[in-house]
Length: 182
Image (cartoon, rainbow, N blue to C red; front, side):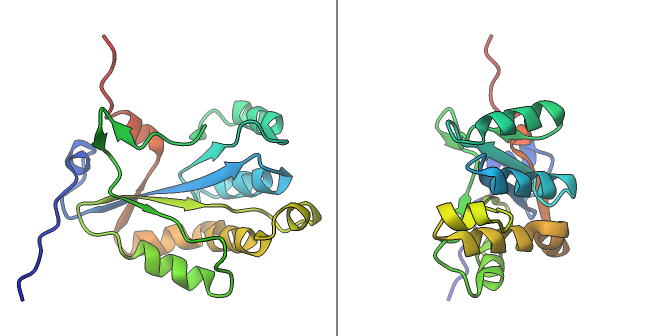
């Protein structure tokens, strides 16, 4: 049986990586959905467990998230992500575990992220929240959100990926590949 050669994403070399590198964005989605989501992002950003996030607009905690962003100008916090540049995909794989998976979430997340091949750029989405009465009241999938926070906190998942040779980047790096208007 012949082995199929994976196509190397051209953005890999433009970013300064080798064609054998695996590159990953660790993204927090739904920041500002509630106080627990903003608190979780703040916690994960502070210990460098994630590389970026996106704020939900409009949401009850949007203003608080905007205030947080002004106080943290180094944070890569956008309004969801554009994953193409002039029709050329920058991302090879969007990796997101269903919020319905609760019991074996850490194991399933690692298995999913391990599917990223050399020469590919992955975009891993998470929905972390701190455990609170608020998150339990508004999200039936609150256990998965709390599990995402626990998996990411303290750099546990980031460390696991880096130990596997995965290079972590943020969205600003990808934005730098987009052509500039004249």
